[in-house]
Picture 1 (spheres, rainbow, N blue to C red):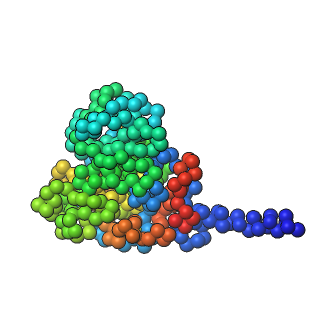
Picture 2: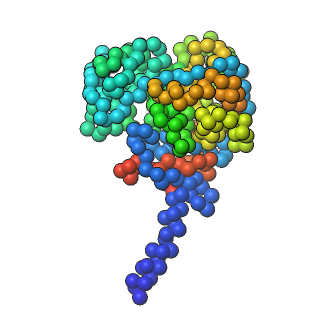
Picture 3: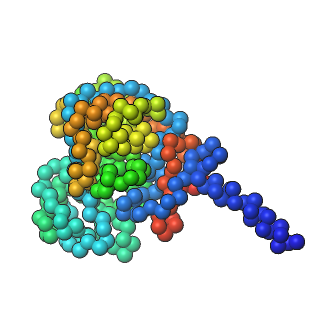
Length: 335
């Protein structure tokens, strides 16, 4: 009899275990697919991984851009890559370096390397990167080491001090049949778009560009470094028929994009992608891509206490991030 009761009890618990997907709970579901730490890093509640809240408030905004381009980020986090010596502004660090990666030292070349450390989960970021193929990398400005298992907020974007790997469209993501499962990163024409309100930044950014007081001339106080921009939930994705634009538009509807830098020209917007992913976004300079950027809204209630426009535990527009391959780091049921 006791055995029968135990079996019945366990069967009765099965729906609750399945509730980790969030089905029928009214809260956010969880994607139970194991994550690759190097490909989809950071905690489940990192702003890079958290989908938009169903409570997000949207305000229309026109970036007034006339051109879109790709902002290239150098990412070398494969622990199988050879170890080289990184000159990080005078400090020598042992890092794993992609033997095919090169960089000419131009500014805004945000670079992320995996440190040769016992945990195989610590990165260092900096810019501008100089690297000959197969050589030792160097950069002038460096940020503190960061765990790939943590929030992942800080990094080498000079305009905001936001991450050089979180939110980046990685090589292979756009070719994959799977949707993008993270927020994106964009840069705006701050001479037209960004406000000086609040020091020119908001969470998760921790700063604005040097000289923002003179250079930011936007009149919407919600738009600045760290602002979360998104397509509204009722966006008609049929407006974006090209496969790459449609895939990005879906991510912008479900996750949004954080403003991490200002662009080099007053009429341009950019999307952050890993070096090597450029061929996967063939429509970057198209009218369709421009139309998508100019359709973005600003999420006015995204803040540290309400990331993505709502508190943790509230319904989300997509499943929350699941665990890493070792079973850690996943969102709790209902997230």
